[in-house]
Length: 51
Length: 576
Image (cartoon, rainbow over all chains, first blue to last red):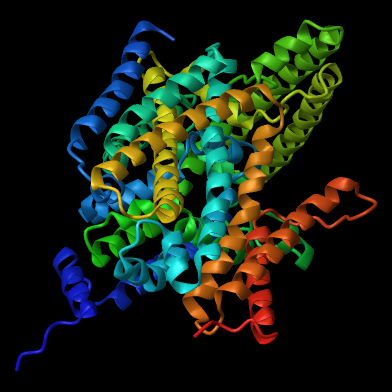
């Protein structure tokens, strides 16, 4: 018997339809937090270079 | 303003209003009116969230903030991406599964009616006052700089917003916010490009950035020098990451004016992507706006600037008995400005020649001139205050608009005024929409029963949007005529946020804690936060702690958690 997809599987599928390059929500969350970390590092460098 | 400016201003604003009405026609029930039939795509959600947060004051005072204090304000937004991830992970699946109209609706199922009502009422009080401030803050600036009548400016902004928000509900708010964001971003980019193009021919973009950096305006990352600095200093990396996250969690996760922006999303996936899209763009966007402020500082290193940007106060003191003294101070300021301009050119020449010693020397001299200018300006401000002790001496939110009116070509002035109006309208419309939904869903429908027809609730929603619009306009007019009211209302909002967040944190994460324990904890936490704010006002000798306002959210939230657990273990267990 074929199993009904769970809501989290449906969300995962929908994510892949909108952003094919992102495999999971976890990956997207990591991407957002990584961007913040990169921005903080860049801001630090920016402050240091121009101060 | 010239005729072409008026045409652009009125044309842009009218287009947005008409577009909002046209795109949102046809709602037949409150699901369509308050949740846009849950059909919104992720980019609509993301832009709508961004436009709701960015009010007119964001675009008026943020460049002024960088002009004066540098770019460190950007750290205030470090909490946004973290909050977006946490809300996507925890709150969205719950809100969506329960199919709620408001965030507070969830609290009744989780706790009880009194906790839901408490959160809804705290929101209604703070947001209804804030919606008036969203209108009056830019109106005051327009009235002092452009000479517009304050009352009529408030009424015009309020009526324009009410027209499409009453008729179209949530869909109208989201659709117009897309246009408003397009106007805002294009206007700000054009202003930045013109600012850089108007620098003297011998000053390159690299020189401008170099000068801003040497003058301490590119301080995008600052570390607290002590624990005291960590608590008192509003903007550093730690307060941004810790206290900022709590503030953003409160704002985006529990403030209905934001929650409503994403509850109308098509699916959990669309909502999450919309939130994360905002999380990724918010910090770079704020960086951009602050960078405009830093470039404006450089621009005024090569161009004369008024000593005090609030013309009305300056005119008032000039016509008083302090006039001759103020005139002498202003003359001294302009002499220093002339020296500053010459020194800035020498700095650029040394930089281009690669003469590091001369660069360091000119930097020191420019810094000394800045200090002198600041001291002279303080003398001017002191005279303004002697003349009028209640004078508004914070002129930073007028710096950018003064630049726009003085240095932008015809037509673009109208566009930039339209940017500010669009920002005011986008925030106000979201606030009115959220106030109406909370009143209809959490108060009217909940207490009068669910037995009326869908058309009845639709009419009630429209009527309440209209009512809150009138309240916002009335409060804006009142606030415009009472000094310090704006400041008190802003503080009031930040005093409630932590408590509301605390209630939601208990609801989401501590299932064993019941409604009565949480309700009592919220009341006690709110009393403590209000006391912490109010007691130092009695006098520095009585209570003298000095806490950055960001921390009230953290303290409020932690107090709710601690007391809720305390009451729970004292015997107020959850009813089974």
